[in-house]
Image 1 (cartoon, one colour):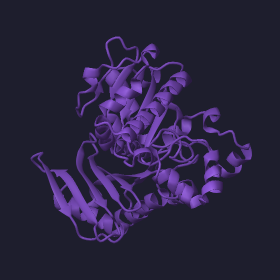
Image 2: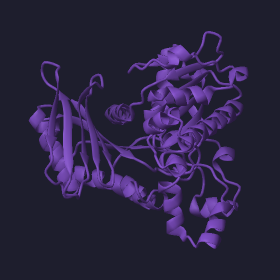
Image 3: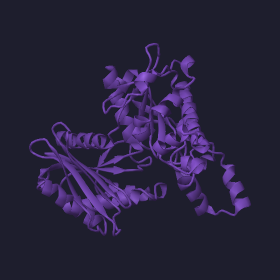
Image 4: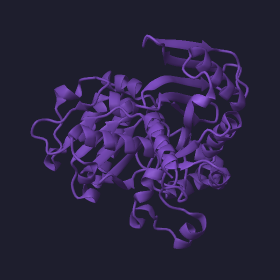
Length: 404
């Protein structure tokens, strides 16, 4: 039996197929630019000899319904999934679960309705996630389908950490509060850190840093998140590729008055034109690092601001946790940028963080330990695997169904 994981975006469909017995990957694929003449689909899979193979298709994919069909055809052609009866379950990434969902759940009409009601909190993501759910349900009949929420891991955050200093009625009536995102990634790497350190996660204080085009930090005590940098939306917190992160809210009033920017223009400014891109015109950390090394002032500034904000959050979360045992770097930047890791830990030796420069320069796919011998805090680079985490949580729900 197998587990299929779907991540349905507004114009893309990412998927992975796992063997149920050990959650090893059988196939993974991506369909991009759905609805565009330049649509492209690709599938990587392992044949019967264990050799990795690839299938590609460049024909237009008009909508998500056709994308699901293309996915099914490619899986069938690869021999990794001949019939949907081979599926023990399907796990769907859903970005926003609000306060309704603290755990993964089997999808039924009530769950779909609840996800629909949360669309105002994630207008770009939940509708796309729902499309994937609805289309898949049409194709696979009684196969159990599970929703795994990005926000669920952060539902353990206490009230004093998730509330904003706004009129309490805004929380009561409009559910204005911190929700946090990247929850599957933070949960996965925290658990992997505990396994690597050979210590129960319940005994550890961990700071996880998911650093990519979107970036967030989480403070985790005993396996439970107690604070996270993203807020009601993914805009708050760290500097990101195109998002501003934390800023003085009154800047918006100022720009509205002085520049005549309306709500939509401000939304675009903060979400798509700010962050690293706003500072230096580029949002790819690889390009920025190369330009900074060559002396480009704006690139240096972008890199410095990114790491300074990160260092502030590390310090704040060390205080919130009352000390930390381990800090984890993950995500595209966290896993691959030695300079970001170096600058983020720079000057923190008196707080017990001592980076080993030689270890930090190593690149490998496995977990990498980068602290110096005299460091009081373990510093780990752990490749994230959100699809594996979704598959694991999906399997957990299926197993609980079978027991009951």
